[in-house]
Amino acid sequence: MPSPVDVRRATRGTTRDRMLSAAAQVLREKGAAGVTIDEVLARSGAPRGSVYHHFPGGRSQLLTEALQFAGDAITGLVDDAAAQGCTALLSHFVAFWERTLAESDFAAGCPVVAAAIGSADAEPALTPIAGDIFERWRAALTRAFVADGFDEADAGSLAVTSIAALEGAVVLCRSTRTAEPLHEVARQVEFLIKSREFVHRFGLPSHP
Image (cartoon, rainbow, N blue to C red; front, side):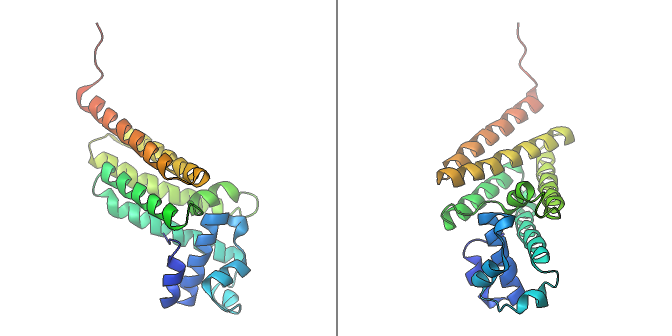
């Protein structure tokens, strides 16, 4: 997923890539409604004529592809870490968000959340894309939990719980301008995982 410095780094890339990176950054900071052609051009340094050259569908196409661009980058991180097991995957996810929040001075959140909750009326095409991205994250986390010995049902439930908890923590971090909510939630999710592992292996304690 593009970080706040990615727009500057992308000057070595194509104009189209710079525009997608800039649009994804605005989406993370201001939501779908804040993504304007003028803002994307200002951040990317792209000429105005490049908008309809690269995105003939205009702002709607640019916004849709920016969400996919950002979502694919995060999904790549999740997929790469999933093979290491659920604890390692969660650690990678927490480290990623801590770095992203710090680099943006807590101005940027998750573009997928921004698209999922703020676009149903103005940009209805974004909602199913956001849903697909979340589903890919859930599937990757589920695989990680299954690889660690959980059955499919428990793995799926823990995956959904982890995503909801960590995404909520990111919102709290932006509001409080500190990464502490992310660390608190991560500790509780880790405790939940270890508790479920204990129950899975040894069962619930019996009471006299």
